[in-house]
Length: 217
Image (cartoon, rainbow, N blue to C red; front, side, top):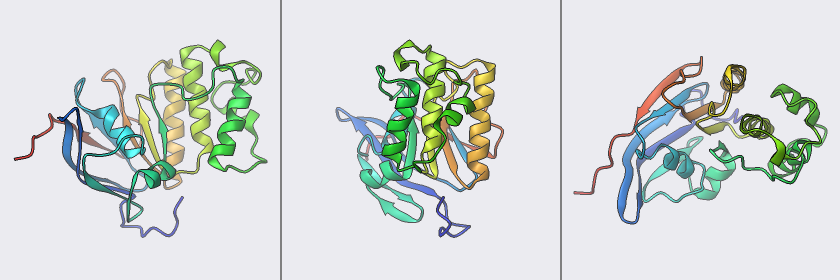
């Protein structure tokens, strides 16, 4: 976590953030902020742009207009990608690699300490005994758990979680909540979307409602 950030400085700030696809507005302009130790729940109907917003904040898509500040500094897509950890709908790991090999690869990408106990990381998400199992042989819920294990290897202060409870049973939902609680307790922040059937995580949560995008005047 960034200990140099003043206590009253938001970790994430967006001002006038917009995105359009094929010249059709998807969301925006949006103004919001997220502080350390907080979670922001993004709400909106199908097609409101919830996933697109997270992909913009992860540096995977370029915003059409507006600016984003991370840790008090204006950032571009590259800085967003390095300052955040994104968990999307797709697993995001290699199907032919084992769970342990996927974590080894993720650890190298994240620059995590080489001595980190990856078997313990798998056990933490309920995948003990699956160290040699290829990801393609995992169930949807187990693949989500592997994604959560990869998330835990990253040192990014900002987590962007798109439907993190999807494909998980009650035990898996409780696991997501524990991981979020631990992250915000360490000074991190979480921006997430959830299906209406799931409650918000048990941490300080604010909401951001995505309304239909406004066309420029």
